[in-house]
Image 1 (tube, rainbow, N blue to C red):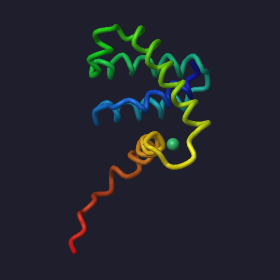
Image 2 (image 1 turned 120 degrees about the vertical axis):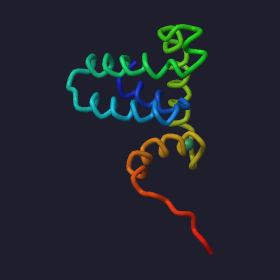
Image 3 (image 1 turned 90 degrees about the vertical axis):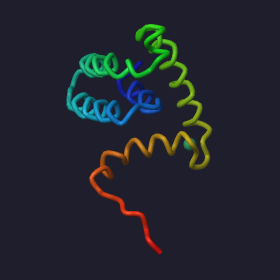
Image 4 (image 1 turned 180 degrees about the vertical axis):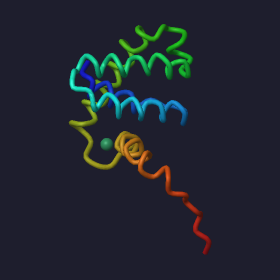
Length: 113
Ligand SMILES: [Zn+2]
């Protein structure tokens, strides 16, 4: 699996805020590396930390979990790319991930009418 695919797959999982922060930092570092294998290695190092949050991954073992579930998710994403005609749950998830970093500094007050 390529780094870019891995990155997309990772964003489709439900992570805690802390894990998302770590992953976001990892993506930034990885994106700046030039070697594909270094990117994958670096991302995997972080995954080995954040996957402790995932009960199933802990029970299965991270490598096995990744091999099985990452491929499944990637297939689902490819299917989505071909078949998504309108804004769906997957689109929302990917967009939320992309926007979160930018919006996190803006403190949102509820609108009082
Ligand atoms: Zn969609």
